Image (cartoon, rainbow, N blue to C red; front, top):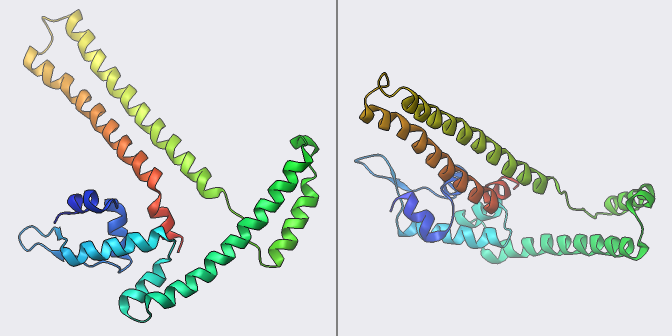
Length: 217
């Protein structure tokens, strides 16, 4: 089975499948004729296991240990539950602070952030970990960056298309033959379609964000 087929079957992007291969979680065979990866039933089963464990928030290292047989599923889950309980306590602490801010009913300009930060530092020194919104900010930046880059290319190609069209209408006698003009004008159209397709694919990858989650562990 080809990687495109695996992507549709399991719902894991090609980039993430290759990432798991780089991490040693997956080792598909190669087709002797063309050298392409050839995914068999065992690879599909392994990818489904990886997807399940990743959805539960299981670190790559733990999955690797389970695959190697160095620990059982129960052992890994026991350790993972400790992490989840810690995260649960962190969320509860964050929620408590949010409720206290809600009860203050004040404007941001009047907020005593210095005192609140000191309180958060005390909690952090006691073991509490607060969320880092950086990853969400980065995702937004990636959306904007991909959209801007695509828009610039589309505008540029559209300009070439209309320039060719204008040149042909203005001086059709000295212009290249019509078949050649059609070919020349088709090129920017094909590029625009390709850019839009790539943008859709890129947005889908950013939405899933699995590759970033995987690299955190």
